[in-house]
Image (cartoon, rainbow, N blue to C red):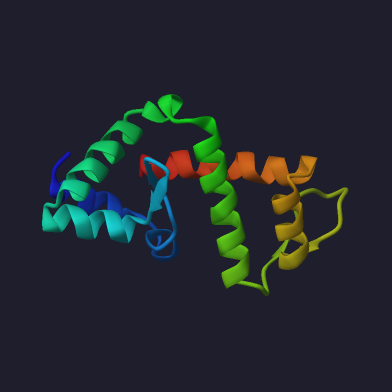
Length: 131
């Protein structure tokens, strides 16, 4: 993957996604903005991130530690709802509308509903790698 492809991937993401952790490397999560910055500087970290992104885009997520992906998805949900506290979520017609605070509590506690939210976020992350 070249710098041009990393830039194309970066610009295809929504503005919010560019500053939300999306690329795991080791036990650290990097935002697309951080990835692009390091790749542009041609640092060792940038080359590692570029390689990781290329692998993830080709479906290497199956080789990621599931706990790592889980933690990143959980962190992304909490970050989103902390930064946008007025957000309300309705996740099923048979359940009440949740405030951001209630939503965060379900995710942190990893209730059945919270786990479903995290699983959905994992699917979103995987789709964002391939944009």
